[in-house]
Length: 452
Image 1 (cartoon, helix red, strand yellow):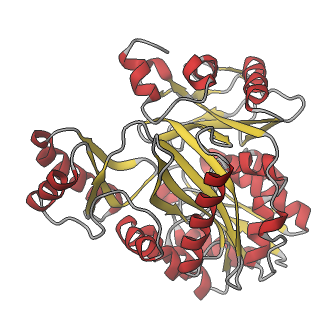
Image 2 (image 1 turned 60 degrees about the vertical axis):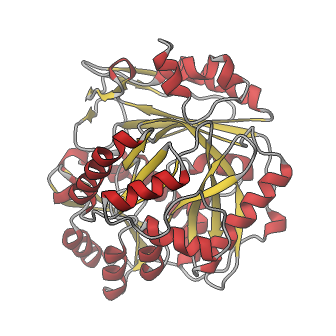
Image 3 (image 1 turned 90 degrees about the vertical axis):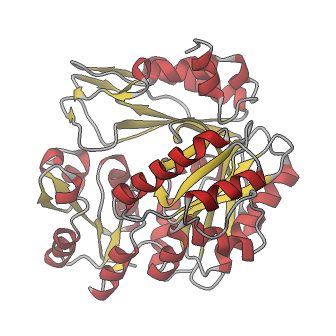
């Protein structure tokens, strides 16, 4: 096992990793920007190193500063969390060159799966079902328009290097295609430094369903159930739950087997998530693979009783998986709400400010993961998520009741601050969501009709 691990991240995920390290007997090294000097993970760490000013490019994306922090503190491993450098194969390669174990898949595997077009080709070879569309990137408007005409509208144009809900455009009719294609390529080039895009059929009435997998270094692995992440704004998740109300036991086993097959076909190791679209007839199609721990991993932990961060670290240290597929038991239902400093009434515009009051809920089977405490400032530099509120109960209805109770207890106040707490309460009370009949267009339809 590692003696000292550097956490190349901030906020709630940094604190989550630090807690796992504590329980494993591993020393904790935190890095922080000037804005995070007083954050909980800095106070908790055995050693903390300042790596730059608040802008991420000068701190949490500054590879030389992070590597130097690892050198000076004697760390022998680096955990990237999610976001920032977590899916950067160059960073993973540099860690290897510096004799630092990167907690994640091998750089070459990350490289192949990080490009969505390449990942689609690999998963098609592994036999995973695909939506109609291109496997190879599309080079021109004319080529893309021809593909769209062949597979039928609506279509979605996606940046091959995209992520985090960015680099996508839905096109409903031929007259919109050229402008959307050009804009998506330009955005992809500006944000991801890679203008390549591909085109696939866009499903209406679909769910976004992902499968958590964990793979060892010896070619073995397990799938750990699915998460329904269909409540989204601008292709970014707001509420996640397990199990998915549209999947029965056979469908659950099938999607899990496909996800694990795809991961093992490319020699994957560690924690990962295979993302699918699930249509109204219960058919699923591969979208992409995330080669890191996900924001929403706690709902899987709640129904499996597993600590996914610890398992990640054990695998990276060369230890065998602690369980086999027959050991995986899914119990009850879990829901996660992302409590963001955003104003839902202004299309979820960021609404930062000082946290004058921050009182998270508690109670039976209620978990709050946060990197904030009262008195801290929510600034403009990072993701607006204040906390992840997660609950578990024997049934979905009970879990939703528990979530509503916990949301009602959550107090967040500050000058200029707005949060998504009221929005979440409105969603989980809505008859369509409560009946488990929502899909990816749920919020779009409600807003069009004046709801929420």
